Image 1: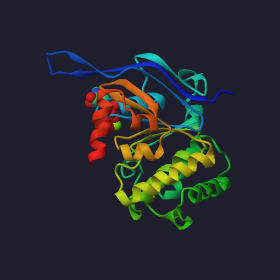
Image 2: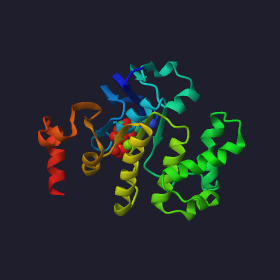
Image 3: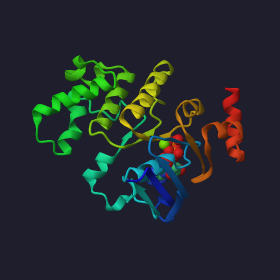
Image 4: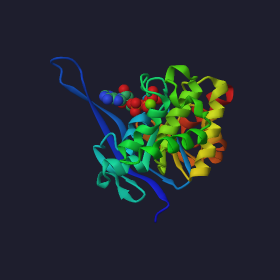
Length: 258
Ligand SMILES: Nc1ncnc2c1ncn2[C@@H]1O[C@H](COP(=O)(O)OP(=O)(O)OP(=O)(O)O)[C@@H](O)[C@H]1O
Ligand SMILES: [Mg+2]
């Protein structure tokens, strides 16, 4: 059993973008030879400005995108050797926008229970119980089981997305700007919840954020990305005290003035 939960080695991803009808394709390198590893129980933050490749990297770690070169291992196993269903049991995403990620026509109960059915839990009597236990875990009252997403607040909707991600008890969770769409007052509640859940369920997080306050509050280590490359990585305290790369220094300067 390894404690190395995520290991990405020299991962590169290009997008081919059309430049118009007769002008052929241009290649955009979204992720450029990025290596990172995350140990069990850690939160690795990935920071960097818009368009620097954070979400692309997240999708590669989730197995939603294949890298052009490089490898990703989860729990020591190459990701391309893990079946779809096993992958979904191992790693789950929590995305930024709980409005667009929840089907407005489904009840909260059925949204959270869907991954159980996908994973082939053949015991419908179990479903309700497991959903209610997970709802309780993320701080959703059971009466919301039969309600619809539009009847919930933004924070409650993000709790539904978290419950859905955790119902099959994954080991790794990739949070891509998990609180950026939320009201400031709700952000810290959700971040505290994510921290509690990590300890309680022995989770390992990759946390993507451009908000350094979030990073300081949550992360064990921080990787800084700049135009697709990882330009710096350090323990959180160390990075805030002694940034090395010029881009990191600029980021922190803006942070201390904001
Ligand atoms: N499907 C796609 N096809 C073509 N280009 C893409 C695609 N997805 C992303 N890109 C480009 O790749 C680069 C990296 O995008 P990515 O979404 O990974 O950035 P990001 O760091 O998550 O940005 P943000 O902070 O705004 O979410 C950007 O220049 C983006 O325009
Ligand atoms: Mg993104």
